[in-house]
Image 1 (cartoon, rainbow, N blue to C red):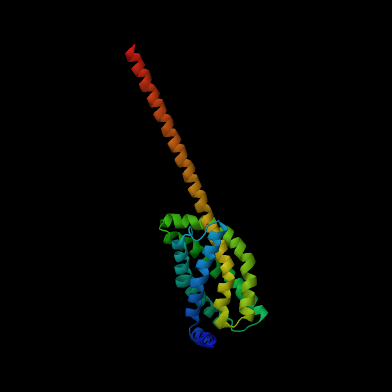
Image 2 (tube, rainbow, N blue to C red; image 1 turned 60 degrees about the vertical axis):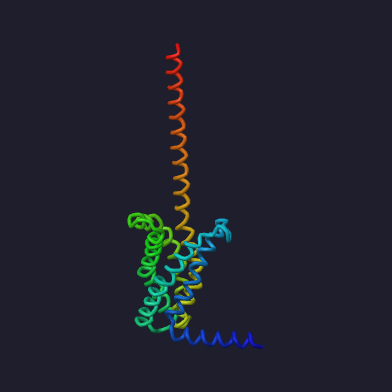
Length: 221
C-alpha cells in the first residue's frame, strides 16, 4: 500500500515540476538518453559492463543535457512564437525550416564539441566536422522532417522536447557510431604504422648485427 502511494506522489510531483520547468525536464531527459545512446553504440561493438567507456558516456551526458537540451528548447520556443498554430501545414513548414537552420547547426556542434571534449585539438575538431557532417546530414534530412512534422503538428509544446529526446535516442546512437567509426579506423592505421616501424627497426637491427659479425670475421682472419 505504501509503495503505490509513494509512486503516485512522486509521479504527481514530477508532473508539477515538469509542467513548471519544461527546460529542466528536457535537460533531465537528455542527461539520461544521450549516454544511453552511447552505451547502445558500445554494446553494438561488443563491449560489456567491464569494458564500457564510462568517460565517453559522461561526455554524452554533459553535451546532451547542458548543450543540446537548452538550444533545442530555445528553438522550440522560437518556432512556437513564429508559428503558434498546430496543424499539418505549419508542422511541415517548421520541419523544413529546421532542416536548413537548426539541423546543420546541431550536427556540426555534435562532431565539433564532442571532439573537443575528448581532449583533441581545434584543428582535429574542424576535420571531424568536414569528414562526418555530410553523411550525418544526408541521413538526418530523410528522417527528421517526418519526426518534426509530427512533433510540431500533434504534440503539445510542453512535451515537444521530451518527444524529440525519445526519438533522438536512435539518432544519438547513429551519431555515436559515425563518430567512433573513424576513431577505430585511425587506431587501426596507427597500429599498422607502429608495427611497420617496429618491423623496420628489427630489420635495421638485424642488418647492423650482420655487419658487426662480418667485421668481426674479417678481423679474425
